[in-house]
Amino acid sequence: MSRRRFEGKAALITGAASGIGLATTERLAREGARILACDINAELLDKEVARLAEQGLAVFAHSLNVTHAGDCSSAVEAAVARFGRLDFLGNIAGTLLFRHFTEIADAEWSRVFDINVNGPFYLSRAALPHLEKTKGNIVNISSAAGVIGVPYNVAYSASKGAVLMMTKALAVEYGTRGVRVNVVCPGHVHTPMTAGVRPPEGADLALFGRLSPIVLPGASPAEIAASIAYLASDEARFVTGSTFVIDGGQTAI
Ligand SMILES: NC(=O)c1ccc[n+]([C@@H]2O[C@H](COP(=O)([O-])OP(=O)(O)OC[C@H]3O[C@@H](n4cnc5c(N)ncnc54)[C@H](O)[C@@H]3O)[C@@H](O)[C@H]2O)c1
Image 1 (tube, helix red, strand yellow):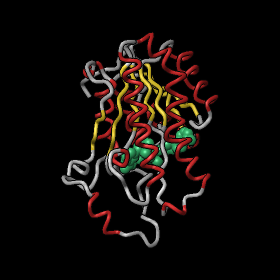
Image 2 (cartoon, rainbow, N blue to C red):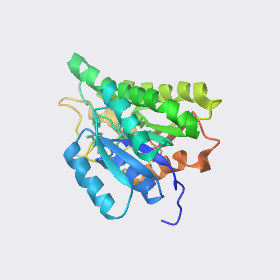
Image 3 (cartoon, rainbow, N blue to C red):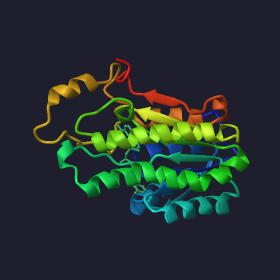
């Protein structure tokens, strides 16, 4: 990797133990960032962070549950205490739920919103005073399911739609204060989250025929990380409130 766009910068990334969050952590670290890598899965996080640290990357593990506001503010404070600054927040942790709509339990609906929406809210609220100082930025992760309706995925789609609008409203509120906020909407990405996921028993499978990507069956986590790295970098100085769809044309039809 020849580019070092994040030399001297400090980042906090959630969902860093796996998939897109791990790929983003690796990408930014290879380009010079110091990173507090955060996840609820402490065991996997420690393993992945040790692997990256062995390669000389400045990545440090911090376990948190994004559904706890206190964990989120502690993580931000830990990043600032360790690095002396915070330039980037990547809200990447998330969860998926496939259910027939009338079979979604209250606790399942709440859990999806707690992780996918409340987590980014708690972290952004804690990070923004520090991001204002560095003129830093936030990248949130929505989904193609936040742009179009995905059947049997209503809780997830609704939560990802909320993330998209949280991004836009925050981008407007903070634009004149020097903080950029963008959202990435991946289509199908090959990660542990999607491996083995099936629609629920009895689902109308014909509906899924309209949801396929055009160019490839799916993306790698590294391909999504490359776009997040662009948005996080100074190359994207004029980009805020932007919805960056990376879905192989799935939502273009
Ligand atoms: N994989 C896809 O096809 C796809 C498509 C669109 C959007 N996304 C979004 O991308 C993000 C990353 O997904 P992925 O595919 O890399 O999944 P993944 O399962 O590989 O990684 C998700 C990570 O989030 C962590 N996490 C879950 N709940 C948490 C909590 N309460 N606190 C802290 N960490 C928590 C998990 O431990 C895991 O390491 C998610 O927000 C997901 O909704 C994924």
